[in-house]
Image (cartoon, rainbow, N blue to C red; front, side, top):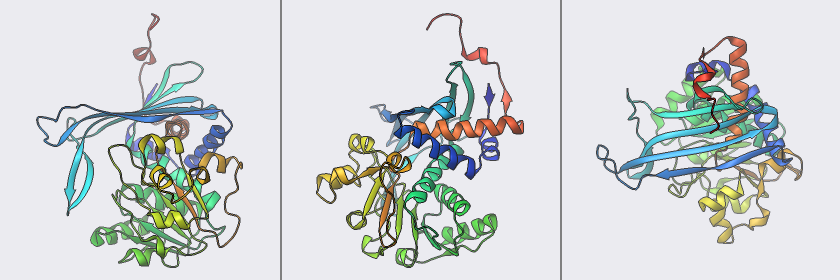
Length: 357
């Protein structure tokens, strides 16, 4: 069995591999050849003694696709709570493991041999699997040759989305907005050097939206990041702002969804379980009809049409994580890591037994 660290995962992970694997597993999901268990989050009902306002949380999600050859279990052991930054409520995860670190793992099990074949941290693969699905959504819903990208966010997820989208499209112009303008400028300079193309920081949400063919939100924002009245005909809008029962956040507002000619989400089931404000609640309030909301696997499999006219407003809400994504991207990482000779081999026997569990 191979043990990988985040640096090795990053070396072995390519946008092309991650996007291809993700598209495959969602086609399998539509065909009944993949399975995904919605994530669960369990909170200890006692406040931490050392960290007032926070408590222990265990989160898990799992899934598989036939092509990946593995079952993926993603788990996180967190110290979770809420804090206020400049008056804005945000959920925070504290790095309280030894050495001021976080604890999150992805474990891959071989579907035929049943034994674990890899263990890796969930950090790098987490941002990649979200960005990969966002690109899959763009392939179905964005204009054929988008020229201008308007990106919201200048953090961890925004960097992956910028890299993955630019690996898929040759944008003539990339604009980035973040309320922390200093951080936004630093982000643009860093990503421009990394990607070898100009990336322009802009001073307002309006500037990020105006004239863009693709609008991608990749933030930790609690509320919508732009006014939906700014959205123009022919635009493609994407969000990763999925909420859960304890974290009712969103990146796109009611008006954006109301104006969409086609609204596609990752999972309606999870949105219903989480009572998501930008999926379940908008349907309950009559903003859109529940039956008109489509799911990404049906789009990938061709069961519903994607963009059919140049003037359509299309929206993809990548509203939740999925174990199937960790199986698809994790398997791609494992294959390339083996070819590159990365990681440390540890005895599989440490994780198996000779008695029936």
